[in-house]
Length: 350
Image 1 (cartoon, rainbow, N blue to C red):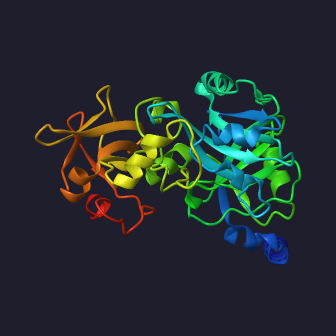
Image 2: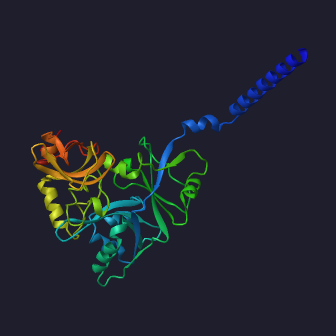
Image 3: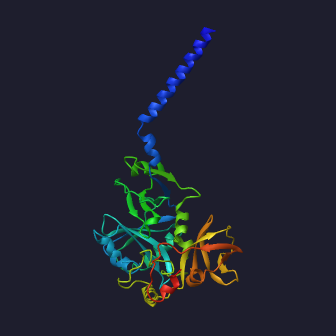
């Protein structure tokens, strides 16, 4: 009996000592507590985007005559590292939405566009090249486009890695940061190469948290499906609020009507975020309860979407909105200016 009791006491003592050792080990590991408080970001490849290289000694005047923004600002050492710009047709309607990146070579720019429209976009550029010494080609086999953003809207840190081109989104800070990385760099390699001291953590995108939903929550359309070529004007796509139009630069294709709309102050429709209560079928028209058409859904996922809607009827009139017989709700983007001059003030007042 005494032997059995002694064995039990010995086993309990060993178990107690082991627990104490494990506790002291956890307390000595500095990362055990710091990981919990570490900022977490979402890192996602943008498979639907492609990079086009535009190179030549006349690249600035060439792009200036085609894009809505002032590309010459990229030449300045104090200028932005990237900018948002739209390419229009002669009627002033949007053909392609792009982000233009400067490089170490002042005669070379990388232009990010929708992958599905890449071939047509390159043909569009070559049409206006005429006799200029400009080379236009895809660098899809060299660079891939990624996006990094914070679900809590925290600022994304920069990276010291020289192999990466890192630039805040040229439209809205809430859309995160664009990363141009070599195509042979996968997700794990990019995470390890982005932060050298592991101050932050990154997670892959999920169905509940991804870049598309982030854009829909902000009411930002992107790509040929959400910005169908030739269907809307740049100011309807909020290009003026997304820093995508310069009203001081010289002429470009579609500039006359864009300037006229801007100076008149009459913009009846704009892209807005919507909240859905049911999946959308083939009919994407947004109507009032009485059946009056107020706009159209341009993209949706889960319970979020982006729609081109009539501003005054939707926001001022507080219309009850319907899509496919189901209720939906439109939101005024927080990043829209609060005070608008002239006729636009009435359209944007809540």
